[in-house]
Length: 231
Length: 231
DNA sequence: ACAATAGTGTCTCTTAGACAGTATTGC
DNA sequence: GCAATACTGTCTAAGAGACACTATTGT
Image 1 (cartoon, each protein chain N blue to C red):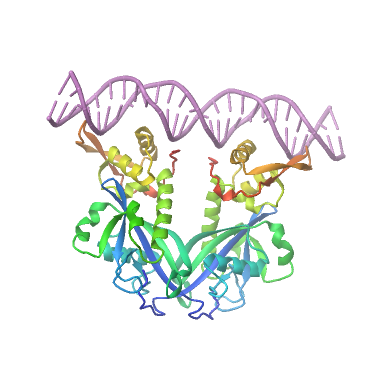
Image 2: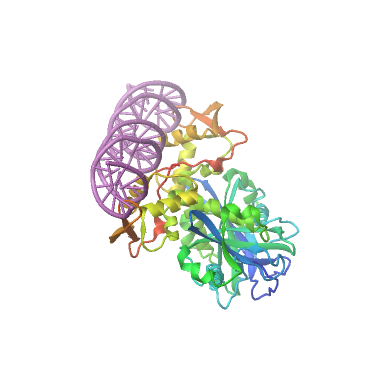
């Protein structure tokens, strides 16, 4: 309920940060950027920054723009996580950040990332060993919990998959995210019940019997399916 | 990822607004405030305003403070909904608002509200008939959807109840929120499975057989129970 | 007695987990 | 044949909806 008498004291620094996840090599990874400015210059932190009112219609655009600057692509999935605020987050004083979390196929960004040295994937289980800027460690943990929850009742892990994938690959990605094994049969039941995927006329070898390749049917929104794994 | 070179262009107006719900007279109601300032002076809008860095440790405090100003009590339940942003929301230009939604027992605020004329409960189904400030109509609809979802798999509707309540009363409140009938038996199963409630040594009359009164066990957090109504 | 509301018992249906069993591939 | 992975069939257990049934109250 704005009333017009704002000032810098009531209008603190506002930024948008994103926790971009992918699954590769059997681990959950998060994209971090080496900071070029104070504070925390030289430390790794989340990609993000200020709104540019000329470029961004809203904060979603800000998150996408900042991610594209660092990865050259827009994430397949992007969702608001939550706002973090207070005077402990930033040594300069009270600050507010709107945090998004996002998912992407690792392959889509790997070539671009390998050409720069200030952007890299980090294993989320190895973050305790490095010092991150601001409260970004806590933000990542919160995002990870939300992703784990969402992976239990939705198909969002598919956003970490390449366009064509096998059930075995998807099972492995889900298990990496939720850190628990699931029943292959349960996954197949979900895939069938969702009616969001179709087998394509191609199989791929995987050490044993050839595996059926699947892809998302055109025009369906994966995010709109809910079903529970009761792990 | 703040970097220090902010200005008013990259740091637009930021406010915190709250959608406070209650259930009374068999309908879902939302608390609105008559605006005393431009823009939209004289129209009804959500309670909210700017952060006060001296009073608010974080945005949760801002939401609570503004709600207390209008209702004299803190809500029993408060949760971040989402951020709304863009240059269409406020005639003065780009703006950002962090929206919370909250629940309260109607009785706790009724006496205070009746003493002022710029705060009132509105039936959420009658909002189309009045003009609200800003995009507050849309914010309320989003909050209502979130509340409906949450009422399906959690016990949050209990936050709309007085301290002691019957199963019949809770059933009615849930049905008002989700706009669908539920099975009394299913509700009882949830109450038992949650182990969060206890019957007290008192019954209350309700037109037929006396009804058992329940209350929340001390020390339990209602928000931490998940179970599905498959309505 | 009867209406009204509270509360119980129990059947069915859906669905997830478990896991045995079959199918197909490379070596 | 054997190891490895893909896929299927089916039993079981949990839990929600449905609804008939019993219990207790005021009139």
